[in-house]
Image (cartoon, rainbow, N blue to C red; front, top):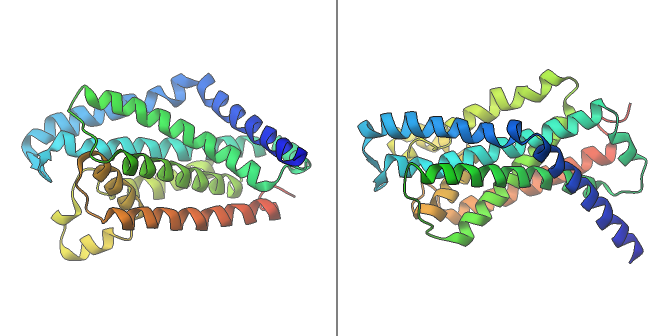
Length: 258
């Protein structure tokens, strides 16, 4: 019982530290994504959307809103964990956790759930911004909340893995720039994959972000390019794989122990 209490205190301490870290610099962590998404709504929704018309039975602005919200959640969750974990390595404060009896699972959950909190806060901010541009409805609240939480958790895990392997500050930006951003733009945020030629439609199904965007869009609007059950199963599969990989890396001290 005492051991469980000690682990809970350790988890709580790491999580509070992570949340306090990004809230303290809210002008850099919370506000910029909201401003960026506002520009997306103005340019893509307001200007280009008038030419596009409807998509999936909805106004274009309304159709892209769930995708933009999910895009902000994904990028914020990832960025929070990769920057925080790498900073802990760079400052060598992570060594204090390594020499303590804190289990690797507690360390992992503390960092990743901190990223989840930031991702959800940013997603909420972007949702409020979206309401100034379009009308949003909730088709299935449980599916919407499940998909957004699982997506934030998945990319928080990915951010931690990136932070483990990063050896310099430039390495922190490689995955977001060359992998995450292209996959996000090709993940059905601004269009339905049914508009693509057959080959590219099937190729798009290999993009995990498509399942997140489509699942979240179903939760809000009731339309999706992907079966929502398949979307949630894909998310759970990736979470299990990345969680196991991250745990193994922490146990082995990869990128941390010298």
